[in-house]
Length: 433
Image (cartoon, rainbow, N blue to C red; front, side, top):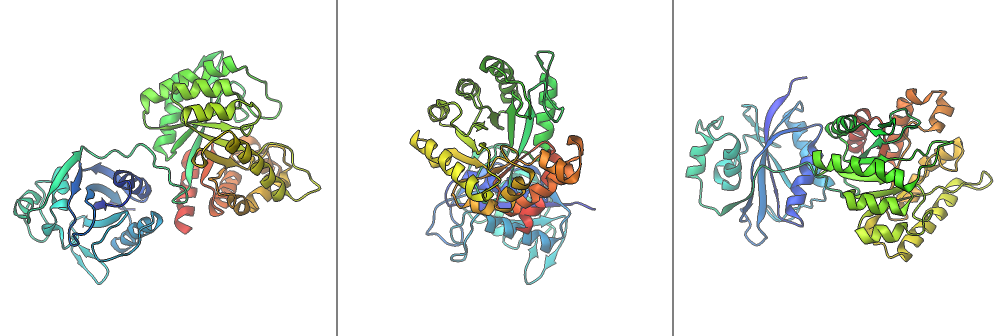
């Protein structure tokens, strides 16, 4: 499968312009791999003056998509981000243009390559010159530097160096976000714990986190107390002693990564949020420890509220789950948490029978009606083992099937052990959706 060298121009002048460009760059992956980014420029409007200034940049990238499929892919990203057609050259949340595709010359009703307006657009020529000043226009046979010198005058102001994409931009409904499970326990049911003989395996932690991020995870979920059946309780002090050094090591190595901590103890939440964690993932739903929500409010963090109380086999699954989640939401709201701080989790495997876990996946769209982002965590769960007769280390295919259903039915985040494999699953599911 041959890759092609391409250059994509990107611009935005609605909302948070820098964040829009960052999200667009993240949505390009894995189909389009960004190799280099130009500096970021603020530019006056072009073609339609009555609008706000744009942020513009150019990405050098590679893809195996043919030109027209690439065009459709970029237009799909624009639609996913909410672009609406207005007047020609009018305001837009995101604009993605194919500037160059190898040395191809193409002129069709749908697409012209090189982009025909490049010589007139200083806001494209300037970032192109950041990347390939001495290369030549495939048709005009002039260098990009020469074309920039001859371009019509226009205010193009550099406002930032090579554009950074590493900090995830969370906008619910745009894509399915991937959370990688990092176990800082000696008794993980998956056998992947990084805490053994009372020592944190720091090098193993950095390796695993780096692999997860390279393979497409946007969030790392750290847990220092197992929740497997028959788990051994861990004191708050022990949890803190395992988690805080891990968070500090991750923040030092990956400063922009989103870090979630799996704990139901308010004292632990307080310590890890102070140490640099972003979210709390509470299997106690924010109520197991009555101080949990106030700690989350104090740090202005996000909290994942998981439904965990047993469901009756005599009643329908989804109404029971919905009632539990509504109760957790009401408690969080009473504790003055803002709506954008709350994420819900239907609690696969917690107080459920194998059949009820299937019900939760099948009825997930009803849970979405509650109006909050939804995290679903089916990874290697026992219900997969029951139905497929697979041990824990052989449940990847079953996990992928459950993740596919969750993503198709609107899960905002999936929490998994096998990041690389599941990233491919949700990337294609998002395209199909």
